[in-house]
Structure formats: C-alpha cells, structure tokens
Length: 378
Image (cartoon, rainbow, N blue to C red; front, side, top):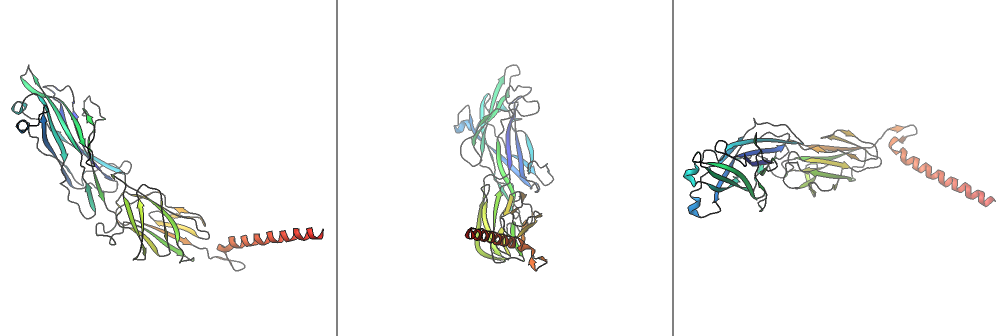
C-alpha cells in the first residue's frame, strides 16, 4: 500500500518571519520480499474557493499551485516491519513563494488535492491500485501592518473523500514538522497498493502461471482414495480488502474441472486430493499467508516438503503452519506413507494396530464365553 500524507507544518501561529507551511508526503508500502517499483506520483491542486466564494471571477484571483511530483526507484530501500516495507518522501512547502498581494490579499484560500492515476507502468504481474481519496488544503493568509506584507497564518486539511471514493473523512490542523507544535495524529493519507503476482510466469493467464501449488503423493497406500485437507489464505497487510482466490484441481497437468474457492481471512476451506493430484492457484500475490492442514488418516504417516519441511506422526494430522508466499514458484508437497516393514511372523508393521484390535476383540469374546459357562455349570 502507499500513502500520501498532506502535512500542515506550523499549522497555527505563523508569522512574517516564520509562516505556516504545507508539505506533501508520500509513503509507499509493499510486501517484504519485493523491491521498490519505479514510479512518479503526481498530485494536482484544484482551486475551490476564497472566503467561501466559488465564483469564476474569484477563482481567477486564487494563486495556481502547480502539480507536485515525488519519484521512487529500486534504489529506495526500507526495513521490513511486520512483513511490510514503507518508504516516505516529501515535497517542499507547496505554498512557499506565493505572492499573496498579487493574489487577493488576506483571506482563506482552498485547493482540492488529488493524486493522479498515472506515473506507473506495470511490468508483467505488477499492479498499482490508486486511491480515490481527496483533501481540501485550507490556507489562511493574514496581513502584517508593521511590515506591510501578507503571510500564511495557518494551514489545515479537510478530507472530502476516502480511499474508495465515497464521501467522508476528517479535519486536521497538524504540525508534524521538526520543531512543530501541532497534533501528529492529524495525518491524511492517499492509500495505494503495490503488489506483484507470485509464480514463475506471472500475468500470463490462467493455466500458465502457478503461484501456489499443493500436491499429494501416496507411497505404498491406496492411490485411489481422496485425502481431506483444509486451507486458509490471508492477504498481505498491504492489501485493501479481502480477496477470493480460486484454486483448480489437476490430475498431473490436466484440469479436472473441480475448483476450490478460498475467501482471504475467512475460516478454513476444505478440499480433497488423490495421489498425483495438485491444487493450483494462479493469481496469488506475494505476501499472502497460507496455512494448509491434512486431516488425520489411520495407517498413514504424513510429511511435508517445499515451503515447509515437516515430518508427521502416523494417524495424526499435519499442518504447514503460516507460510508467506514469495516471488517465483511456491509449492507445498504432502506425502502419505504406509509402513511396509515385515516383522517376524510375516505381518506388516503398519498392520499391527489392526491385529491388536482383533486380538483384543477375541479375548473379550473368550472371556465372556468362560463367564457364561461357569454360570451354566452352577
């Protein structure tokens, strides 16, 4: 996700010597494991009003604030925090250098600030979701008699639309600059999402890219039976809203027509796989967290390789735990093995529990017969 924060510096109490300022900051965030994309984020300032007047002749007197841009490139790096990398850059004071005398003197000026949907050319498998938020930058200009000049007395922002484009938001008069005295809680952010599809061939279409694969192998067991699994997928912390991921079941490389729909962040979704089958997700982004559990199967010992390497216990379930989807191929291989070791007497070691159960049953029947015989003899 990326955020653009309109920060009002020296939000109140500006003077001729130290006028209030307004700086535009851009925070670009994405899942750890990715690199900073090359992008130029551009912000536009639309004239809204002066002293509440919106007439064309008044708008003509309002100073023009040109577009502001902030550039990002692969050389910009950050430290992962909770699986997210965030990088912030800021513009100079966007109202510095304005000739308020030539404008219309003292009063309250308003510009609407929006982020332009431009400046990013996605490579195959990349995506940038731009925000539909907007903010009004409110600048109060005052007159100083002693110096016979105008200066920016205060600045604040009013959010007019939130990220999904619906109306709403908050008002703030913040001063979060060095030496400032305002409330740092007043931050206004345009939230964008930068994501990259996992897999070796991202963006090439369904069937050509395998972002996440869960496979099943059975050794010395029933290759015709289905084995039960559950899966959860949780979106990366930089994702706006939960997604629904569709997995396709394959016999080797041939689709069976069976699909598994997994809602990100929801309860575990069940599915079954037979020997040689694979559940393939083609469109999972980097940073997604996956957890797959195979249910217990009497007589089978499970193990996992790939994104996790784990050995299970015969007859018990086995889970990968939370694993993070990364760039390239992401595979989880489940293997179920039947113990075919022969012990003296020609019995498979794996069958000992069954013979023990049978023996116990015979013993119970024999004991019951003896008790009944004694009752009859009496």
